[in-house]
Length: 283
Image (cartoon, rainbow, N blue to C red; front, top):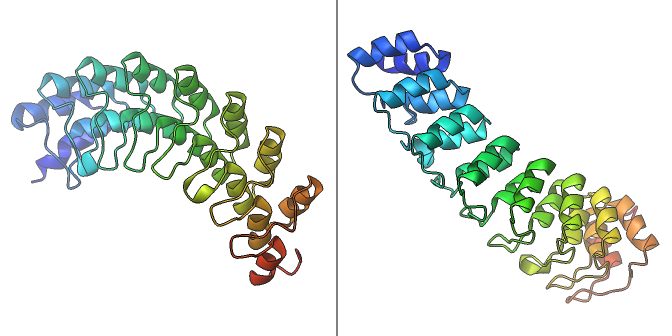
């Protein structure tokens, strides 16, 4: 029993000597921890290529799936361990293996903003439009993490700028939600649709108003976002900002000729919504 985690410890410390001894006695290089991680997963996490090389030579499964179907390649990509990624790919790691949630190694690298890893994966034909269970592409991940250069690499490699999730969210919706102005600007410069309608008809401008992202609001309006766009229930960006009590955005929208009199499907104006949400300053 005591010997089992020992190989994991050697992998963590990149202790080739200890690992060699353990492997001579303990035949299974894929001994797994409680959560199903093998020593190779651990080596991948720390970027310890020496122990990883040894484990692979001793027959470790490079595509071993731990909890939630996570492979060593997912781990190496998440932590940006370029040499490890390279070693795993050379040893036939599946480039597009998916976790339980549908994440590929490219999703992991994009979410953490590891540019060189992204480039290496793409050189090895990683699927740039792979989708998670929720329909997120690697570009959505880069937008979520505010990784401008990662997003740029994906776009240069022909990632569709207006690719959508199962809820019809584009990367621009994601950037607006998170308030990531630089990513939003990159996407708009690459001709992202400023008026893309997600589920229920929400545009990036609606989302920026809901989340009180004034810088994104300013950027979207500069790039041709429709100030009076309505959702399926008839909400304009001004309705949303009024309801949420985003005073700066309300003022900005009014200065840019947003109409305070447009009723929703239920006949409510932004004033009604502000009153309903008890936003007395805005009234």
